[in-house]
Image (tube, rainbow, N blue to C red; front, side):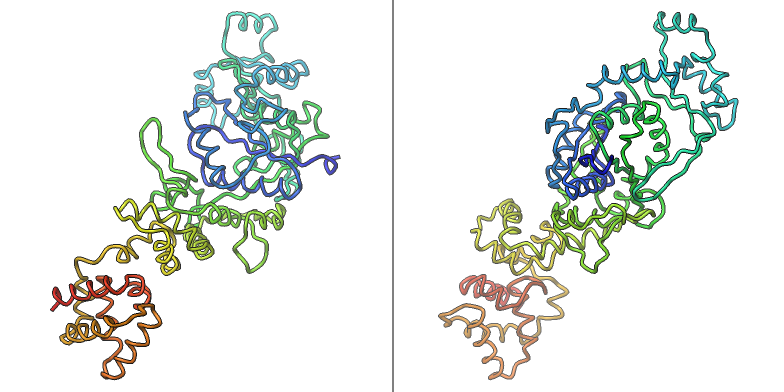
Length: 506
């Protein structure tokens, strides 16, 4: 019984380029499902299409999951006793099952050349190689056994096609979509094996691998739903119906506007990544940014993706990976496509920025400070981060906002100067310097008490003083509270900046 079997799911990407963010979500849902049921997550590489292989893609995929914290139990680079886990290394295994289908009359050999097939498509609108047309083509069903043997002895290239019988209602048991019923009449006789590279196609390899690796649930993207009826028929043809996995076809990730499938062009157009890590195309040299390099936290990406097509039904939105494991319910995934709200992804990153300690963010920000030629002690960087991290979404946004903590301004924002620096400002700031100079305690609280007392005694407008003072220390009208800034800079640097501004601004 399926319920008595240990849950085993798999993620099986093709090494044809960078991993799309939709693939990351599929892997995440497989991970959540496996962990929730105390099962196993298998990592398999589908490289049967050798013409599309891209060097470096496999390592890229593995590095992506390492960064995201999605851990596999077995598979390529993880080990296991059901390997090999690369399909290109399983040629001999597939050959046995191709022969089994041929011997049982469930498949046949076809010698039609690409040119012959193209000519047929041009001659027959909506041509499909199926029960209605197969007897008009060059295959083992129409050729004598002697002719078939002769062609194979001559080394003619051929394919093996699955023989789909018409008139059968195929039921796909889908955990998200329920009972999906499709008539076999609309299915074509899919190619299962190609003699050219002695490799099976996706359809045969997946079925054989899922069976031998004892996969109990196949969780994949909606785009694979049309192939599910064929896979059901293949399981039956092999006599494996009793161990057929249950399917779950996830909703598509849609463009931010909500219409059409999310693509790399959408990311280029709107300025957000569609890959987990930066990718450099080995052929063109084109570089595509990734979530890691764009400054996203892996926890934020995981949380964001988990909510694209599923949610726990609560008002709360921030969940750790462990919490998501406890809450996840594949049956509650949406059937409709999920709009890729990249701005929501940025919101998640900001929320995780708020959750992280100043020490964590400072460790990420320190290299940026050092790259500017500044040798700042760790505790100083932590203090700045503590004041400023709630104002940013990404660590990379910190330097433009808080550079004044480390580097004195050499120019003064003209717009702020016109608005905040008044005729009396130089005189008032000179007076303020004399208030600050004798202070033994230059902490924020001590400064605030002394300055407020002085402003009250003089009858000055606090806004005039504080805005002009900010311009002298920061160079523009930004930053946290003034006493926090001056306390961080210290008395000597504060007075030095104030004097320079008075000399320059007059």
